Length: 387
Image (tube, rainbow, N blue to C red; front, side, top):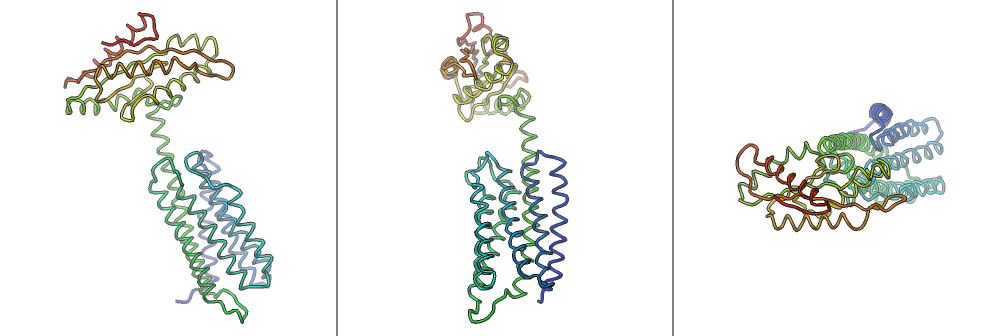
């Protein structure tokens, strides 16, 4: 098959532009998408590299070589930075300096070997293979704190295809070089490369946009089920989880324990230190509670300063021990604010038992833990009571 390089350049430029414009438009309209603007900018830069290559037809060979290498390398840099921006704080990033360094080395090589096609083509292909490898590394997301969804796997596949294409191109140049003759990359190889790059750009862009969509859906789900201040489940989400927890407890014949926890004199914190300080106290109390519970336990922000923990397979004695452990963890040390150490105590009401199959069995158990909480409040606060 004979590939018409000029046609491929035009088609690839059109495809890159068609991808770039809607992505840039969406990124500018909805700034919540991390890295999307950088990705779109990378596509714009890549689209410009194709007419830059065409400058050779007008005799501007050296200008074309400089511009093409700069723009194609910059595309890889921008896409690597776009992925890093998207997964900020969720995966181990590549340092920005390491991302830009290969591009700088690439341009030095281009300038140094401008009149030596052999070394320039081989070294540039090798350097861009390294850059594609860095893109793949960032797409994989080492130490990623979340599971890899479909969009990320599509992006990983595309980046792997790009890295493989550039490695094969480099190997071919080394193997096919005739060091006794003037060497230019054959048009067939150029055509195949551009064809592969066009396909990879399409796959990568689909993967990156799909990642953005999946992340947005997860964020919406988190907002619907979690308290935005403390990060714990909200009351509505807890009500959705309770039937399954109750059914499992009945099926396995194991008790289900409830801890109703309330911060003592929380209004004083708001009145004395302000509502921002009150928010900081709520976040810290929620964190200490969560750290003392097991992975299988469920805890939610049940009211303003009230929390409810549900402990599967936990009898009354175990629930009381855990409640006392949590109470002590809240009492000491005091919560550190910007300009004060705020002493905080917690009252806890405990109930444990195997729920029966009546429709309101779980509500009754929660009600008993709430009664125990009020008993703890009436007995002087900063204590654990049970019903």
